[in-house]
Length: 265
Length: 291
Image 1: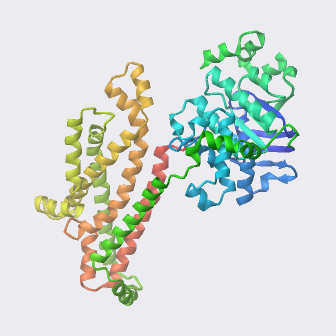
Image 2 (image 1 turned 135 degrees about the vertical axis):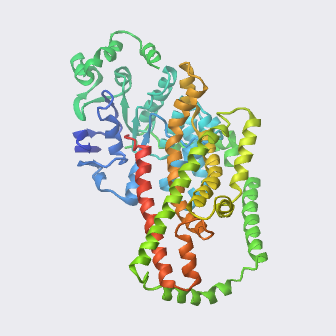
Image 3 (image 1 turned 120 degrees about the horizontal axis):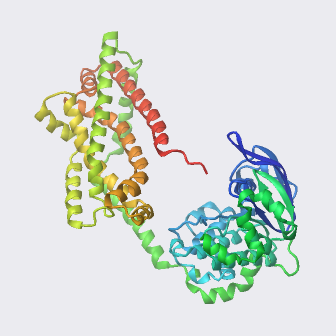
């Protein structure tokens, strides 16, 4: 169980995340929705401790994550894998090495720096790539791949961390409709088959409704909605998206998600 | 957490291991040849280094025996003392001259090198002949050290700080030309393409696509060179190109070690001050990006 208690993060005078309290049950697929600047990314970065909170606590299975430092913090980061909108792969390294960086917290520094990966780790890396149909690209340089392929490599890197939680920060925002489906399906499979809790930031209400068990709506750093996809009424959407509500609600009235994505791509 | 139908990645890797091994044997094969090449190269380089030391008659024991002498120098230098206030003012004035030589020389060098940096960059000048001539002339200028340039300029324009400014300018013109052109070549071509797509000409692409990307890098290089040239300007002062160098040389020659240490401390303060100012300027130019 991941519990977030009164979490606040201020940048200067502005609170990016403001007094957020949430409970995420193990094995859930939670979608975090809201317009740009609502604090979704900051919330995920706070959980991974890429950003430190100004106030509040994050507690996972009884451990106060906000108090961790040093080695314990690195292990926590390995436990809640992160994938990013821009993939954040190391373009000049090959795909398998990129994936195996997911083992860094568990391998001795000497071995990892000399890139002496064990056969078990290589098998883990390949198995993760294989799950995402990317194993045949293992020896290629990461920057030679397309966006969708790179995101799948990033997911494989997250998988070899063998995390409890996977934090996905707008994972499909720079992808085309077909790759969007490939990546979202992969996340769903990981959630179902490996039992990894997923917290996914999404712009599109459509996708959020289709894939997530539970939705968390954020506006101005606050949680303004919690519930299931069908609880998300027009009124709530308007509160979340303000004037943009017309744009995002269109898809609820029959316009295919793919058309809209293609238009905005 | 793991329900009956759920497996961990490690479990999958164990089960699928044999199949993956058979399907992708290259991943598991240690490339002995590549490893041998790496180790061989390291051994070769270390050997070359040791050989180099041995033919240059490096005698480490002489360094150890000399350590005592070094200690004596330090004792002579304490406490730093210019004796009279007028002497101290002379030194401070000479140091200011040195700093001025460094700043003027570096700024002139950077200004002159800016167009040549673009002319020597592959993504700006596709013609290799033009690039070849620009690059080779930059190499030629760079291959002569600032100290030699100082000796040359002293003969041309006479003793004094002007020769120092010209010396720094010429030697760093070559260095900046090379650094600038490399920074331009490493720049991302997408921005230029964007400018091109709007109907912008070549000059527009350089002005709006390339320059904003490389300017912070140029600024940081120039600022570093101002700091480094404050030290170089001390050296070229010795051959009469103005600044504190001549005083430093005189005091070492006349065994006035307390003066020497006073001058060294002045230079140290000047270099740290420049470093402090330049790091602030650098961040101001780069502009800390909000994420």
